[in-house]
Image (cartoon, rainbow, N blue to C red; front, side, top):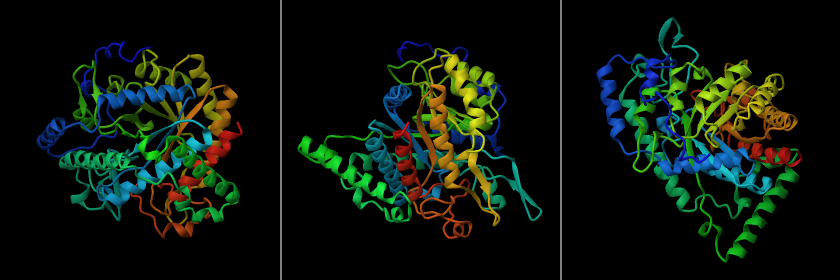
Length: 453
């Protein structure tokens, strides 16, 4: 179905979510200040364009057909302090390097989607947090409040909405400039930080892969008669969870020569598992957008509920409109994913399936750190490929929480990080992320796994 032929969602406006049950919302003590901040955001120039949004929809439709592969990755929650050139450049570098590994190994184009330039809000399991008898509002991400356990920091501040938009714009501007300038030396992968490979049992295979990538790029340069950066432009898209609905509403616009409404604060918004009930405010907001939408799918979702939500979000069964991001956990994916795959397949729903092997594998260590084990992340991803193959569906991408920094937040990997290593460089305020080495290792493992299917 042509993307330009479908009518707008019925009985929908950017404000209609306000008539529904809204969870994970912050409580502001100055409603007038909130309205002033939202009005300011609504007048600011958009962060992305409608034609970029529609281009991503087309790319995601191709991914659902197996003609490309989606790499979505970035921070669990961005912090205002991380809006700096080094951190942004490192995030972009690891995603570009992972994508080159995937392009070379899978022999497919890769759709690159960053979890940044707007990933400032995070859902919480409780509205408040208590320490030593003191109860304060929970930290909900820098777009709402600060992480420090003080009344001043934890008070939801409307001006943070404007600050988040500003930092998202700065990040987008820098990312675009880096990409247009040919950032990340894709011609010489041998220069990458690959010290970790010597610790891996697959080190011989990895070294061979890196040498092969270098040879392939140099061959392409020879054919092109010049540096690869001069004839190949990298497309890069942004994403974040559409969680703080007042802010998302302020970013929702109409544009000339296009029908309908676009969230121009990001290319690819998604609805998280905590807010994905069919009658929720978040589903109501999402159903009216022309953006491609993501939906997190966990082990408690029933086939009937999933099919009902699919019909709400994609009533015309448009290709590229809806991406289902399953996040089950390594120990549960085998029990729960097949029935969902079979139900969606029977319904002939046109969706893209991608795997989030991070969120179902979070645990706490004996020394009080929130972490994830690389082996569980790997296991869930490998099982996902096998389960899709067995049902006859297609896994079209991955959704990862990662950073370009050498943090120590996830256990395992080639260097076999242990609990005592976490204290060395644990930086996340919310969820643990794969570090540079673990992320690149996982990309190489994806190539290995998919290559034998």
